[in-house]
Amino acid sequence: MNLTLANLIPGVVLIALGAPLALASRWASASFIAFPRSRLASWICFGVSAVWFLDNIWHLSSADHGDYHVLLFCAFATVTVLAMRWAPDFLAVRGLCGLVLLGAMPLLMAGYMNYNRPLIYFQKSLVYVCIALAIWLAAQPWRLRDFLAWLFRRTVRSHACGCLLVAYGMLLCGLALSYT
Image 1: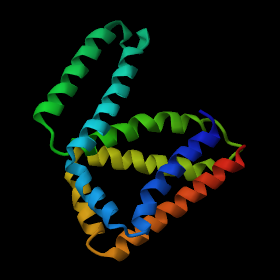
Image 2: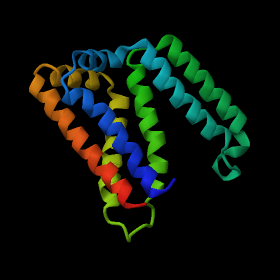
Image 3: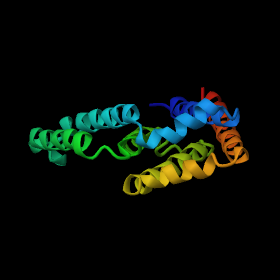
Image 4: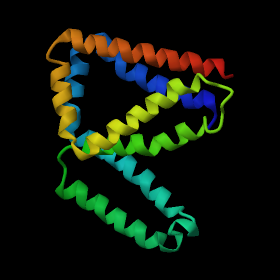
C-alpha cells in the first residue's frame, strides 16, 4: 500500500462516519445507537474480521507457527462459529475492533521508515488512537453503547463530533493528494 492510499482510506472513512453526524440525521443517530447490538452488523463486522484473521492464519510462515496453520485455522474457525452462536452480545463492536486492529498494520506499514514526509504523522497518530480504542472496546464493548447514548443525548455533541471527524477526514484526504 502506498502513502496516498494509506491516507485516503482513513480520510474517506472519517468523512463517511462524520457526515451523517454533522448533518444531525435522525436515521444516522438511530443507526449508530443500534449498531452495538445489531445482528446484521455482527454478521458483517465479525464475519469479515474473522475471514481476514483466518486468512492471515492460513498464510503463516514456518517461523510464525506455520507448521501448525491447519490446526490453528480449525481452532479459530471453531471459536468464531461458537462466538456467533452463543455469545452474540456486542459482537458487532468486537468485530469492528478486529477490523481496526487488522487494518492498522497495512496503514502503518505504508509510512514505515519514511522520514522525509513528516505529515504522515497525522495519519499515524489517528491509527494509533484507533488501535488503543479498539483494544479497550474489545475488552469492554458496552462502553461504545454508553458513549453513543451520551453523544446523542444532545444534538450539539453529535454535530460537533461529526464536524470534527469530517474536518480530520478532509485533512487526511488533502494530504493523500499531496503524496501523488
